[in-house]
Amino acid sequence: MDLMKKLEEIEKNYMELEDRMGLPQVAGNPAELQKLAKRHSDLTDLVAVYREYRQASEELAQARELLNGGDADMTGLAREEIHRLQPLMEAMERRLSLLLLPRDPNDEKSVIIEIRGGAGGEEAALFAHDLFRMYSRFAERKGWK
Image (cartoon, rainbow, N blue to C red; front, side, top):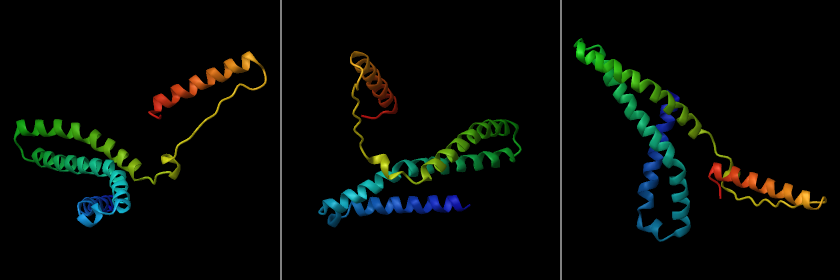
């Protein structure tokens, strides 16, 4: 599977970044350390989900082996485990697909919005106030500051 190879390469790159960040030469160079730390931070979620996915995949393979084992009690447990793991793995696959999408360079940038009450006197000021509250609440729900 091409996706798994790509994820393995990303995990390897992540571990190399961790090793490089621990080197004394890098610790003495703040610009390089910041660059590596940023890249490391960008990969952290992806690698964590990939590791969970890999573990769940191994558990699913073990459950399938137990299913073919023959013992009635173990077969029942294996079926339960398979039914628990399959939806979990599908959700993790979707999350991995989203995490692999390239990020928009504008995601990291700040925005300043200016809202003014235009011509219209008091009613325009009330509308501007309502608009400000609407955008403020929207930003809170999205976790923006």
